[in-house]
Length: 563
Image 1 (cartoon, one colour):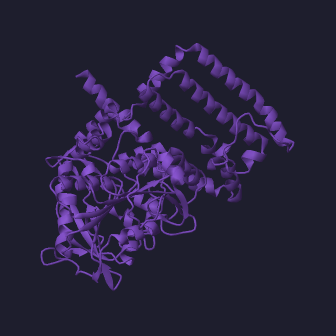
Image 2 (cartoon, one colour; image 1 turned 60 degrees about the horizontal axis):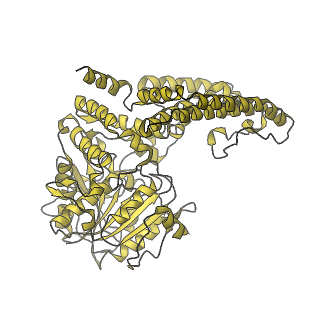
Image 3 (spheres, rainbow, N blue to C red; image 1 turned 90 degrees about the horizontal axis):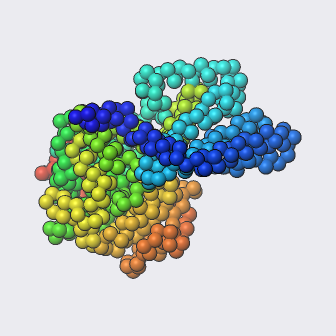
């Protein structure tokens, strides 16, 4: 009983388990006095060299700093950090202290998971106490205060008070008032042609005189609103496919509440993806359907394809997966949030309310990249008094959803916890899944800066599937890598031509593949359009919107996305 009380308390106060991890590392460090002495000596030596380096800055000489400067760290981009001796010394002192913390952590190493959790917390702590996060030690904040006669500080204080009271201390990141669903987000014209207790199915209006015979079903992540692939005009992959002569449908998931706490992964297949496939087939009359998926939408699409293969259902003609995990054996820093103890804490919170809130999940993902996703806004909003920008990706990211308790627990424990899908052990709706039984052609996209689905982890999927696989590595991160319309800044790597079917074997080592891949200027969207069109069938007249069985329910983007 006492253990249950402890877990309930921990689920509220320390859901990730940072406290025990830091205590564990500290306990081991104390037993390693030689490493502690070395760390202290190194720290003192670095601090002793800083005044001399600062004096050289004053004399406009090469400072020869005791610690190298990372020019990619945007927090210290202001010239004062290089040219002002005081700020130069402050930055050097901060990184010297950060080095000390790293050395002390190394001195207490001894348990892979606990070490990583402690390192994650200490990195978060050091990011929080960076001199850039305080008005008097941030030259950019000081300069702006002088330029505005102190008005920027007053605005920032007002913004901070609002965010602390109304948003539990989370700074506003984006001007959501600048966006309206159906107008400048999720704006591709279409109709909802199906609705059940879990999903709506949207059929988009054609934009070309003829279309290819094989329709596309978009499978989005249920952890976010569906319109990440229909983000905004000219930034919508859905719109891009339609303009390339495709008939496109999309799944829009209901935002779960406490009434859905017992909904399972089987339900997400039967009432979700499987029901949507039936709708697309009935409306278009096509026996073949291409699937375009992203993140968790890719996971359920691959699971469904394997489930279909087990019953000799060959409707999926081609599969595209963007930033998707199928092998969960190495998921990077996210793996620190899904160990058994942490999942116990997550389940305690979900059992109480019947779901995991979108805010809790958003906070978790933000903490992984807190420097960019939290503290950056402390400075811009709370200290410089800057109004939030109107950025469509951030607006979508703020439009979070909840997770049904039972389904989310099954997903985390079976896939993240035990890697059952890649091992061929996962059972979906009564059938054991074999990803190797998926024999349709597959197009896989990884993003080089993805912190949620590391590209090397997504690459592992190429050897799990049974058909011909094309892997593409794009620039950007988890979202920007997918929302990647043709532009001058886009690049991607690939091997071979997108319209080839040579069945080339891909190396098992992702870095070996990268060494073989050719770099291209432009977006992977263009490469995918060639690949997809090659598998799209003949040109025919566009099918009608809806059918007698699946009549139009309402205009896109529908009702569920507004919940």
